[in-house]
Length: 300
Image (cartoon, rainbow, N blue to C red):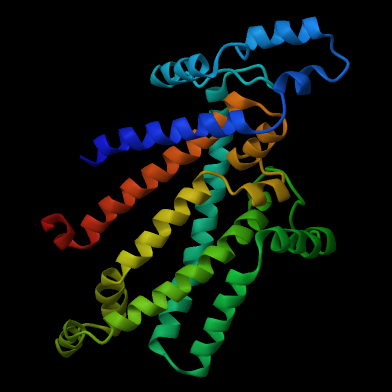
């Protein structure tokens, strides 16, 4: 049923994408040929691109292409949109997974530490760090990291995707914001779980405290964490537009910005459709994770 419900969702998203991209001000023909082009040249290119046909005809051809797996040809790059997306997708996936690893490595230990020492000075400091991390905008944090670690210390490349070192600063920029959200959520959910009777029963049976905390308590508090992770993973995999632009990271996010600036309708549509499909897939994986973590979800 869930897979069937994805059909109207994707149809609605694709229709909205088509409408929005055609509302964007600017004529792609003028951008491609320039202001000095002759009217005959403009009409010839407009006819070759199919932009002279009624919008409803363009829409029907657009949907037909989607059903056949054809996302069209980029007006600016003169090649298949699907090929352009497939070339950029690995870079976005690499950045997303690295950012997720950074976020989990920071948030889980700090969240557990704050929950076990709720109300203490350490808890207040952890909460202040979480608020600070969530308050720092990516477009500010990224350049600051570049100035300090790349230009000042020379430890990491300024931009581009040239190896493991070039991944550190972009993933840290994305991961810190996500870590702040996850840390506060980990603390809040663990505080609810740690007072439950079944944990006291486990301790009375001699179960080690580490196992009580990491196996029994953390797993039962993961439903809320999985929700946040599902939403954020969709955003990360689809390409963090600002971060990829700041660090010149060759991912889907930067490709989307380039397509918008060049008024490349097919490429903009392809990028946004890719982002939408990633979000839908992330939500589906989140639902499956619910059932794996909590058997009562399957009974429902």
